[in-house]
Amino acid sequence: MNTDDPHPSRTHIRLHALQTTLSHVAHTHSGSSYFVFDEAALSHAADLFERYLPGVIPFYAVKSNDRHEILSHLAARGWSFDVASAYEVERVHALGVSGSRMILANPFKDNNSLESLMRYQVAMTTADSPEELVKLQRTFGGLPAAAQPAVLIRISLPAEGVQTDLGVKFGCRPEQAVPLLQQCVELGLNPGGIAFHVGTQSWNLGNYERAMQAAIDALNTFNTESGFNLRLIDIGGGFPWGTSDGSGPLRVEALLAGVGHLCQSAQAQGFTLQAEPGRVICGGAFSLLTTVIGKATRNGQTWYYLSDGVYGGYNGVMYDHQPYLFLPLDQDLEHRDQSPDWAMTVVCGPTCDGVDIMSRAAWLPTNLEAGDRVFTPDIGAYSLVAATEFNGFARSPIISADHAPLPLLEAALHIPVTSAEEIPQAVSLS
Ligand SMILES: Cc1ncc(COP(=O)(O)O)c(C=O)c1O
Image (tube, rainbow, N blue to C red; front, side):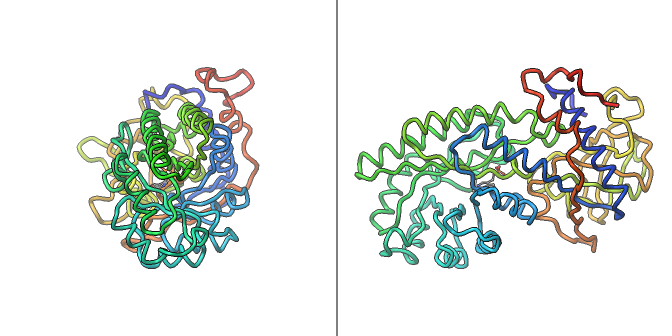
């Protein structure tokens, strides 16, 4: 249940459409759990990104979801890729994407990653420490600039209102960026620009504003002092997705528009902008459909045991700190907030581990029984990539929603934000 959602009508339309889509799939596919891939949702998310951040070169963050369905779609669309390891370089290269369309945006590279930078002539990489620059010099120092990856110095600033603050692990303070760029020059490396990542699920535009200003200031200072003319700023990822309330893309547009304005202002000052979106592209492209395998009442509360859990498709509960939404496949969602038949239930996975509990406050009907279906929308990011087969439970496979996108879903996605509270007359929920 979500009481803070500013767009309940649009969210309801969207969830109703998703439920209908998944019901179609469930009628034609057996199996207790599977991810349902919706290419139209993927395409819509990429459209949104391009519309709100024109001229910002997108490097899709492969780490968020590396499944072929996503990578091949974005490769065909001409997108570039943010890769984290030699394996990801090879995955993307196998699609026919050259290293010139990749950034290895891991500030700490193992030997395999260094080799893949060289072998596939990956265009860019990041670093945030003098030690990493020395490592890069051992591989690339002295080669002509054209034979080296451009090195972007990753900065970090305090993040506010993010789900995971990546600055706890990566990024130098902004005032250290200029000395690191100077060190690149001294070591015979190829200085490229500034990168940052404001942290995941950043609904706070201020994080982008502060990081962008710091990046511009660092480049202006370095250019003045060195005679170089570096213009590249990589604004990373962090773009949010309405995962916990079922709003998916519906609340995201305002943040994207704000970041887009920031980028346009930097572009007007002569900077080239690129980004590494992950979650905002793949988050809505997958739903997870599971089956109730057991039920219990403990201390007056209903517990549901589902066929997939924290060790499988729901691993984002642990690694991504993600509160997910759980909805019944076969019951009316329209009055769920007020219904006396719904309650806060506990939802857990099939393994024998006590940590395998997805939520202690999942708003669900209390009359579900073993065999009934539950679905979770917006589980495309940081889920499939980290699932295990702990206790012998196989990973949930992927099934494509092979019908044309439903008119209702299309309608919900295209209602302008300004009229968000209203359900247009043309859209019927029946
Ligand atoms: C370097 C880098 N770029 C991009 C991303 C993607 O971030 P998001 O999924 O928040 O857009 C991540 C996520 O961890 C990252 O570490």
